[in-house]
Length: 447
Image 1: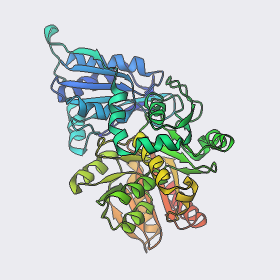
Image 2 (image 1 turned 180 degrees about the horizontal axis):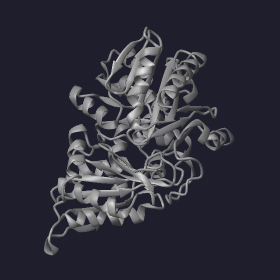
Image 3 (image 1 turned 90 degrees about the horizontal axis):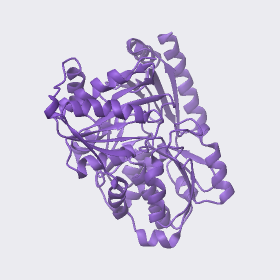
Image 4 (image 1 turned 90 degrees about the vertical axis):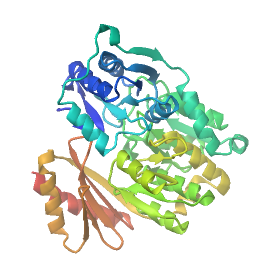
């Protein structure tokens, strides 16, 4: 399995493409870009993270960086601390939703967000050049920082009415699946007065189910919500930047509606632009229209969403993978913001989460994927466009085809050697048929 290198950072399988030598070189290149400044690092709890951390430290220290080590902490916490400490940048050690054998490095800019296109391309170019290694008396330093979760918490709590939430005492089941969400998740929910049951609360990376918070991986959470009579179930991915939700009936409502619910809540109180990516459900577009607010789509990728949010001064934004971006906390996907906003929205509506979800516009979104080398992506897009000549085509981020009431998109993943096919339509049958038809053309094109 080759390592995957992109403007989003580095991912690979330990012992098969992601080796200490290359990781040290990658980190030294980052240290050179950060010009030996202060760099915040954190890791997501995977068992390989400790080894990876020392390789990263070696690279950063060799280029004179002053490293602040948060230990095990979520990706959004790392981003928040980069801003809080006015650091030159940051590095999160994570493979996000990838399987247990994977790990990687996600760089942060001084803004506390992931690298944008320009900075990512600068990093890729710099990897082809020697790093700026310092002499023995110019090496960097490393220090630990123990209050990162509290600083992040202090930015989230002002978003909601803590006193009233404490009075309500929502019953919540939280599945952190042995990831870094275990550090702040229970602490946040306790601060909001919730009665919390935590699954996988030791952040050791020993996942109890596949890491991605999909329906088929969260059956135990759905069952627990019903058995315990909980108001809501929350599931975070290993680095806690994505949030999936189970309603009070035990129904998996998924990641797509995480952003929709948060946008619906935020726009009830304030008006402003909303930004999502090109693969996000049109539910959020309908909600923005209902509230009379601007709606914008960016290319897929957190950095692209953030860039568009900053361009239009967006009130809130995010991605349909459960990633909510709230500028008041930081320009980074944040599952903790998502939990806080959903609980506050439930409180204000004086009803159940299921009732709130059922009041939203109805669409079905279907996601599939196929292993695909990057050199065959163009062929897949071409085949799909020829198969649907009646659709309105949008290129630049793979290919998106739109009709009046449905759409389908095909694009290469930035973090895995796969091609994603996503369709959305007003009902299950139409969405599945569209995705299945698109997949047949894609498979034929990529072999």
